[in-house]
Structure formats: C-alpha cells, structure tokens
Amino acid sequence: MLALAAGMFALAPWMINAAPNEATMGLVYKIYFFHMPSAWMFMVAAITSGVASARFLFLKRPSADGWALAAGELAVLFGAFTLVTGPLWARKAWGVWWVWDARLTSSLMLFMIFVAYLLLRKYGGPGADKLGAGMALFGMANVPFIYVSVNYWRTFHPLTSVVPTLPVEMGIPLWYCVTAFTLLFIVLLRMRTRLEHQRARVEALYLLEDES
Amino acid sequence: MMRAFFRVAWIVVKKDLTVEVRSLEILSTTIFFAVTVVLMFSFGLVVDGRPLNDVAAAILWVAIAFSGTLALGRTFERERHNDTLRALLLAPADRPALYVGKLAGILLLLALVQVVLVPLVGLLFDAPIFEHGFHLLALLAGGTLGFTAVGTLFAAMLVRARSRDVLLPIMLYPMTVPVMIAGVRGTAALFQPTPNLEVTQFWIALLVFFDVVFVTLALWTFDPVMTD
Image: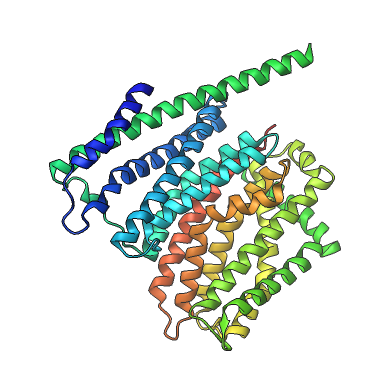
C-alpha cells in the first residue's frame, strides 16, 4: 500500500500537467489538485480523531487512544498543507494571501484546535491522554458552530459545487489526486497508530519490570 | 434524584462562595485585571482620540475572555493547592453535580466582574449599554455561559496536568471562537447608531444553541475525564 501511494504521488505531476489550463487563471489553478485532497484528508483526520477519542473516553478502549493521536497528528499535517497551498493560490486568484472568509477561517480554527491538542498531548504530563480525548471530542462538536458563525460573518471561497461541474480532463487528475491522498492518509494513519500501540506496550512492559 | 443533584451543586457553590467572600482574592484581582485589559486595548485601538469602528464590542469581549481565563485558572488552582479537588471527587456525590456547582460559582464571579466591566466600556467608548439592555444582557449571559461551560471542564481536567497555566488558554480560545464571534458581532450590532436587532437576535440564538450543546457535552464527559 505504501508502494502504491508512493507510486501514485510520483505519477501525479504528469497527470496534473496533462490537465488543460483553466480559462482565466491559467496554470495557477493547478495547485488545486493538491489543495482540495489535502483539505478533505484534513477533515477526515479530524473526524477520525474525534470519533476515536469518543470511543476511548466512553467505551474505555485503550487502543482507540493510539488512533486518536495518530489522526490528530495527521490533521495537523494535512491542515498545514491545506493552509500553505490555499494562500499560494489566493495570492494569484484574489490578489491577497489571506481573506477572512468562512472556510479559510474555520479551517484555521480547526487547525488551531488540533495544534492545541498535540501540545496538550506532549506537555500535559500524566493523564494527558484523557484530557486530549475530551479536547478532540469538543473540537469535533465545535466544527458546525465554527462553520455557521464564521459563515454568517463573511464568505467568498469557491463553492464545493464546483467539483461535479469540472470537465473530464480536469476531473480525472483531481480524483486521481484524491485517491493518492486518501491512500497516503491511510498508510500514515496505520503506521503511526502501530507505532503508538507498540510504544504503549513497551511502557507497560517497563512498568511490569519495575514492579517485579 | 433531581433534588439531590441540585443540593450537591448548591453545596459546592456555597463552599466556593464562602472561601471567596473571606478573601475576595479572585474577585478583586479579576476585576482589576479586566479593567487593565480594557485600558491596554484602548491604547492600541483608539486613534487620534477616537475609537475605531466596533471597537467597544471587541474590547468588551476580549476582556471577558481574558478575565474569564484568569478566574477559571485561579479557582482551580485553589482546589489544587490542598488537593481538595480529589476530596471533592471522592465525595459520594454525582460528578456532573460537582461540575454544575463549579460552573455556577465561576459564572457568579464573572457576572460580578461584568457589572464593573460593561459600564466601564460604556463610559469610555460612549456605548449605549442601556438602550437595548435586555438584548445585551442575553448576549452577555449566553456568551459567558458558553465560554465558562467549556472553560470549567478544561480547567478541571488540567488541574493535574503540567504547564496548565498556558494550556488552558491554548485549548479554550480556539474552542470558544463561535462565542467570541457571536458576542462581538451581536454587541457591535447593538452599539450601532441605529441598532440592528435582527442580527443580534441571530447571534443570541446561536449562543443559546452553543450553550445547550456544550453544557450537555461537558456534563457527559466530566465523569470519564475526571476518573483516574
């Protein structure tokens, strides 16, 4: 799976290059092929982390914590990628790096919540896993509120409805990139979760040795 | 069942009030801090002796958020000091009732802070705070409840954590962005020369919705996160 994801990413530039230029924005719009998939994965990672946290907190599944942490890290990773590629495009399309639009602001706030989550996990000390789970859960519940409040506050991002209307030559590379990013997300999530579970096991073994 | 719940909450509130009334430590320091915040922002945002647009509403809510964080931190620091939070949790009482008690105590404290803060902002920025007093009151109540509901849970969780002083605002501010936007925009609409009540009502509705969701969620999570 790792090899497949890597192979798809190696091919992605050709696919994107083959796509026709957009009428008004020309070459610049092509960053969209990486921007949108990473934004989607950002959302998926955030939801995964929230759901895993809820499982950890309410169903007391210790393994869910590893999933929550791994997904939380990926949310920050894909979030950072989204927030870097977005302004690069906006500079050309809107003439400014940043506008206080609903989607931009809510993505930024969600990103901030997950950065705070990681800081808490890292510096919270003992019990940080539970605190983090509470935080991730609240973060997930907060998404609709952030979205509605910021939406009412301002809006100018291209609508999501643009995707189905894209011509086929643009649609194929877009869905190709979405698949590549999804694969990357799954690979990273599994690797990171396994690492976290093994770390937890090592810790448990150390504890056992200390006791005996 | 319900009566026992509120009795426990009331006992927690009474305990916190008794401690606070005897020293007035948190109340006096928080009020003074809020006044300081208002002044600091005024120096930044008043140009040529005139405030920028909507500055009064923004300063009011930033001061509420900052002083709220301070009050939350101090309240739980007091519980940590003699490990009394552990004693509280060991008591044969409903955990959510303890949460409600703590929440009510901090809300009362912040209400007293706002009694000083709101007229001060009205005075310094010539804001019409009494014109639509009921709307402003609803915004303040809804916003403070939302902020404190999330804050009380986080501050309680953080009692045993390292670097809790910095972690509380880091966690709380991104989480309460909707409260800040609703509070500032709703208040700014009220402070216009011709107040736009429709906008204010929208934000009050959003705050009520936020409060319901997050109080419920906090009651629900308080027990599992506070268990060792």
